[in-house]
Length: 213
Image (cartoon, rainbow, N blue to C red; front, side, top):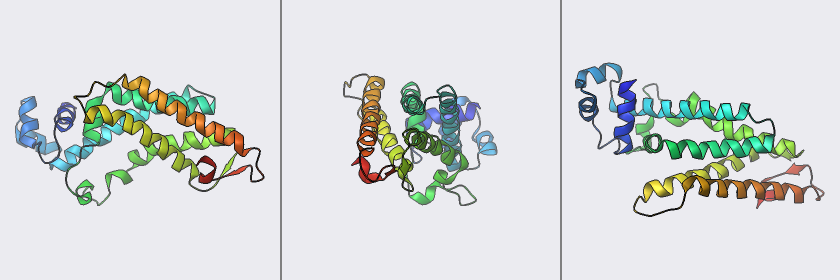
């Protein structure tokens, strides 16, 4: 939808506070009333943009998962695809993580927070599931929520690689994609090395967060 595409570009260059419905309407030659007919509030428009961003990303990551049978390769490719997506779509990244105001501003009319929506959960589960499959391929029996914690570590690293150049555009940073792959490859290599060491312990196959520290 043209409204969503235009709103994405506008939110990517501003915030919820600085971007107005009128500004978005003017950018596409619509009346303000036409935009409000589909999105009664600016917040609902921003949330719709965020949802579409995550839907596009999730579909791409699920295709990557489907094309990689080996669990370790699959985890690496999913993380690489995550970084590649944002490198190619920086406006998606900026609009997805653009949110001025308090946490209360991030709710849909029914009270649901964006982070609790189906697409937000689905997107995160792609990483958690891929990490759990990686652990299982080693024969490990992880403690509760370990896969989620390791997946969050990978996401945090990837997120930092993307946000650093976007947040500091005046810096001449090296190739973001190559940097991201360097970070992710080293993290997953570290996970694998820790699992290899854990196999020689009496606790194996039980592994916890302590295994990776």
